[in-house]
Length: 574
Image 1 (cartoon, helix red, strand yellow):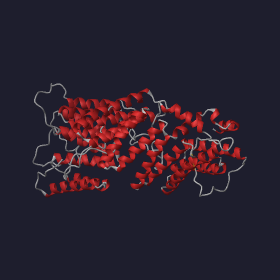
Image 2: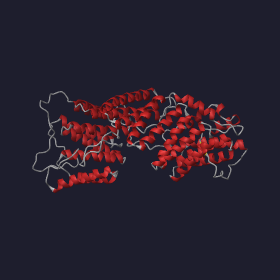
Image 3: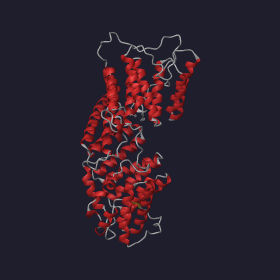
Image 4: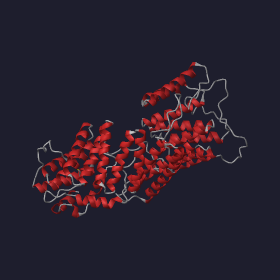
């Protein structure tokens, strides 16, 4: 939102100039430098509460992008307090959305839900259709995140807990509601984002055909805007859905388009992911030579990017492909390499899998030690742990077991590999909310990152703000709002009070804070984490690594999926 400087003094002008420079740098993607200018603007201070609110919002978003979640939550909390203090409902709605988004990524879902509900209530009360659509989109994101988080918390493949299903079903409802509004508004960009998330949610639920329908819409809109990155994601998502529909040839075609676009965008990590997915798809199609070709390409890029996790997965895949072709010497080379990498990165499951594969291959070859020579570098090889060597050398070991697993898991696949959203109970604001870039002046903006200060600090802020509202309504807030500079000749800044006596029933905003305090008091310890745990996958391994189903299920593999003479040895090693 444009901001006017209401004071002729040089200090005031300096604050605004610093803030504008911070905004300019953030627009260019230099959030670290932008945050530094915003911090300097706060040190200078201002008497203009609108300017200060905008600075809080922008600074919170900058720290969100920098993944400094404590600071992001702190400044979005300041923004919420200030906008409520000056009666700026529009600002309060945006601050609530940003704060809810930050809380969501920290797993503090109850609090996030309250903030998002406030965002929706304000926009609905002001007949702001764009704001309502945004709030509904955020609600969908929170439920989507909650469902995914539950799936990630130890659920067995194909056994999505009922709580996760309910959350994901709610997410689809909110996304559909959002679509009805953005279609009326004619906002195609917003429709594209919602279709993408809707497709991801259906995918998590195992509704693969519905996921395809949504992602086809996402793809069409991405092409309309010439958004190659969104187009690439849509092709990848479509490939993932077709895999679980059993249409492997169709999936391969979509992965090939993903690969072409990744090369066009010069994104080496995504290029490697596409090669990995193609390699696995061709293993499903039993075209092992082509699978080896793509897995070798994945391995080369993983080594180039120093992605040890990706290297391990490539060696796993190459070993399985060579085993299926009966190239046991090549297979054991990659199995040994997979074992070495798994030990190095502390991947216990990968290490156990590699040990089983190495043991089986040694027995097949009658070896007492590992081969010392590597396979011909002209050969293309990759190994996927979980596919076991076959008895005649030419058998496609593990293939039948893999297809059995796919059949078992298709209906209720846990799909924790989908979006990177965290769990929550209601709804939340999405970082990628639609809209054009605001004017050159400092503006309130929607957070695109995730963050969160210490829970105690946030509770203190909420409590102090609530005390101010319910108290004498004359308490000074300058000490709790950094950057607020008051003239010494003026009376202490006081909160506005509405007509009526103190016996009036609590207002909606008071209920809002009551709910936040209750949520904080009952929050589970695991929702207090400072930041989400880092991903356990490497940059060259796709989120939608459907072959991880094999990895997870190896501990329970049925005996007939193993090479008969090796079953006992495997179980002992395991």
